[in-house]
Image (tube, rainbow, N blue to C red; front, side, top):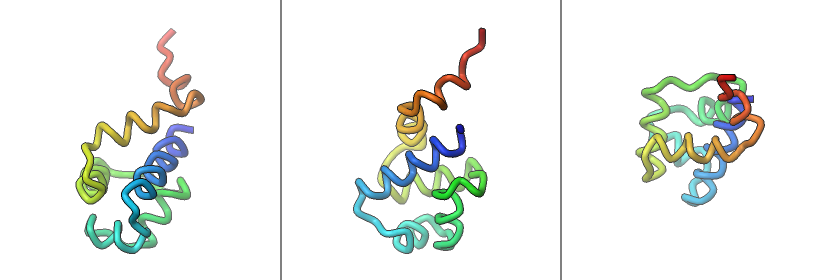
Length: 81
């Protein structure tokens, strides 16, 4: 669930930036297939990759997490009670 929420956040941010996967991948120093795997939530993201993607999107890494937190199911995994 959390991986899917972050994947959806990445897709939303990429679309808002008007970037296809190939351009985002190039700007972030990654392959297009790596971006695709992240967006399909079939791969986990490292902190370095998250940082590079955020920079390529013109945003802070924390902004991607805020987008992910819009997913109520993901937020439920944060409950500590």
